[in-house]
Amino acid sequence: MKGENRFEGYNVGISVNGLEDMGGVNFKMITEDDMKKYHFPNLEVAFTFYNWYARMNGFSARKSKVRRNKHKEVVQQNFVCYRQGFREDRFQNNKIRKREARADTRCGCEANCVVHVDNHNQRWYIRYINNVHNHNFVEQEFISFLSGHRGMDDDDILQMHSFRKSGIRTSQIFGSFAGQAGGYQNLTFSVQNMYNEVDKERRSKGTDSRAALSYLRSLKNDDPTLFWKHTVDKEGRLEHLFWCDGRSQIDYKLFGDVLAFDATYKKHVYYR
Image 1: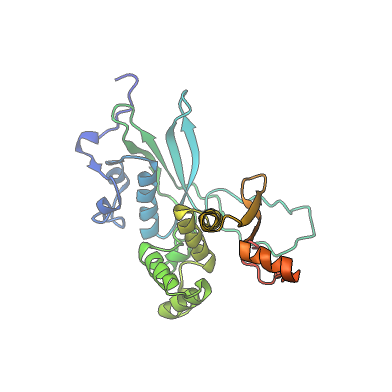
Image 2: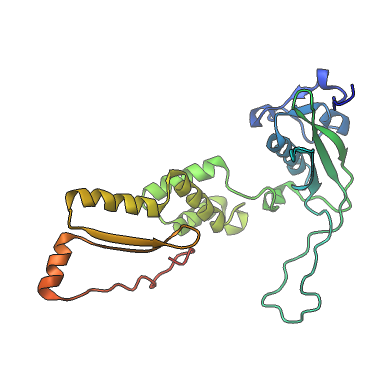
C-alpha cells in the first residue's frame, strides 16, 4: 500500500524487544533471509542485535549514515563493519607528530546492514544486509578486544561498586580484576572505563559540588555566622568555593594566623 513500508514476512516475523529475546538466537548459523524476519522496537535494540551477530562471527559493528523524513525523524540507519572505509591521515603532509599513529584497522570493508522503520506499526526491520567482508575475522578468544565489544558488563560494574564501598581505590580494583583474569592483557576493559562508570554513577546521584553546597546550607542553619561563597565558570561548573564557620572567625580575630593548603599537590584525572 502506498505510503507504507511493510516489510516482507512481518506477519510471520519474530519480535525482539530486548536482550532476553536474543538469548535463543543462533547467530553462528543464521542466514540473511532469517535475519530479515526479525523486527525491533527501536534503533538501539536493532543495533544490539546486529552487534551480537557481529561478535559471534568475528567482527564488530558501528553506526553510520542515517536518513530522516521531512519531520527530521530518523527513519533509516546504516550499520557497518568496524573496518569500513579508510582513515584520513591528517598528518600526511606534517612531518612533526607528537606521538606515533595508531594502527589503521580500516580496509574499505563493504559489509553492512540497513534497518528501516515501518510507518504502519513503528517497528524496525532489516531492509538490506551484506555479509561479504574483505578481511579475516577475529578469533573468538580475542573478539572482546575489539572496540565495539570492549567495556564492563553488569557483573563487573556491580563488583567494582562493591569494592569502592569498602574504601578500595579504583586503581587497586583494576589490579584485582587483572588478577582474576590472569593478567592485564586478558581484561576487556581499561581503567578509564572504570573511571567512566564511577563518573556515571556520581552524575546519576547528583554531583559532588551540589552535595558540598547542600551541606554548607545545612550548616548555616546551625551556625548563622557561617560565611560561604562560590563561583562557577561559563558552563555552570563549580570553580571556587570558600567557607568559614563562626569558630574560625573568632580564632582569626584572636590569633590572625592562616593555614593554607596546596590543593594542587595531587590532582586526579579531572585536574582537581
